Image (tube, rainbow, N blue to C red):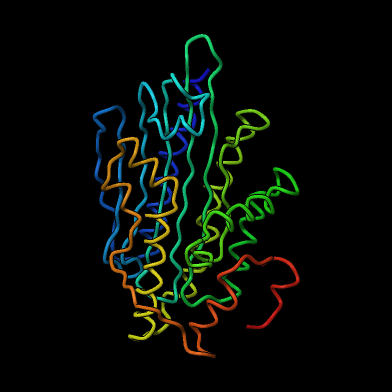
Length: 310
């Protein structure tokens, strides 16, 4: 049964990677994804696909990986002692998109499955994933659309599901050392195994399948907007926050590096360029200040607050 679970999820994830790459390359219009297949000495491998220097995407990647081993690293079993002495498989697709135009948000997402086995005992498994949006010059219409699609993906699974995973996303993608969210959130879930495999797998598919509906309309609306050096400089500065989060707080990056994952694929999520400025603050009344004032904090984007002006 455990291998049937793994095979079903892996088939879905490989197809999702194909669909994401096809749609994103079409949206870019001038660049294609190049594939880099790789093997992991300890067990497993994957296929990394990267798009660079396109008309829309300065850099992006959609990675599939399937890694396995006889036992997990001590850092994993310390937090989950029930996994000690178990072999494991971790399979997932992750994606990140860094558009060139500062008016188009960066976006990240992933869907993943983990299963650990030990002879004579029931397998331990769970799903995780989600997606989030990181705008530099946000437009409320875009943020509301993003969250509306996320909620629609969650609604068939319970009235409280969107609110729970939206709040988890706000909490997870929070830069504690900066006192701000990375962006405007979305969905984040982990350790999902309630209600049986089929229900959890259906939810993972709903999240993965809804990403393009959430993101591409925003790309299409914003990628032709004119920008200058000021906007580009701000984009590069804010990309620094993206780097900080991934290297300091992101659990997926940490697990990948500690479990012997392929470093080049794990760090694919990094932007092609980023900058840091000492003690910089936005000008009062500027569009840059609006990002800090109105967007980099948890909000109920689908409630009454979405009608506020900013």
